[in-house]
Image 1 (cartoon, rainbow, N blue to C red):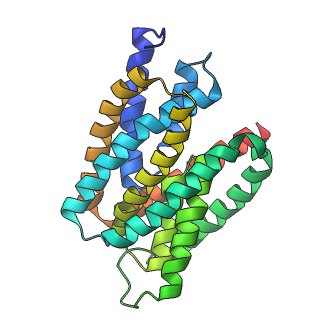
Image 2 (cartoon, rainbow, N blue to C red):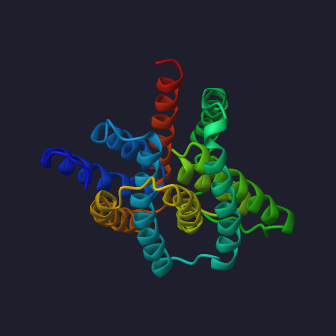
Length: 258
């Protein structure tokens, strides 16, 4: 366990619980968890902060995935196919993270987020109910490529907002309602976290004792968040989604120009 005050440990555990809740509902818990870890570990190598973040997040995401699977119908085979592609993508992103300018990527990501937020905001019916339109093979392959390889690569490279991107992509490509898309995204997100975590662990960049403590709180928050999403439905998820997307745009903007 690193040398951290009791007060800071409490702050980190509360942040982990809140991040677990956000991740379980719609993704984006890293918006809270990463800054908290940076605050609590000011002298740690950035890769150690990222690795510890992944070790915490994977536990809560897995717990949320189990909760969703018990309560809602998910195409597990398809989720696993996308997840395996995401595993490969996230490992590739983590391996290349040091050699790509994130300053160049942030403006592009912000533009995509603003467009997506506008789309969701001005199409109130988006994701409120599953579409009766059959999903073509081409759409499935596109989901594997975009939500799997593409977003998985992003998770390994940068990270924040991965779950949110997954929910949006799965809703749009596979005609899912937001609750089912969020459930499917949790399975995929476990794979992206696993791929990136494997790379960080191999490099010795994980504070396992701290991660284990925070993971317990992250799991508790995730279980509560998943149950709330299932109970309150797609309208609730949509509201949280727009809030998280807005927060992500602000965060990226501050990193780019702040």
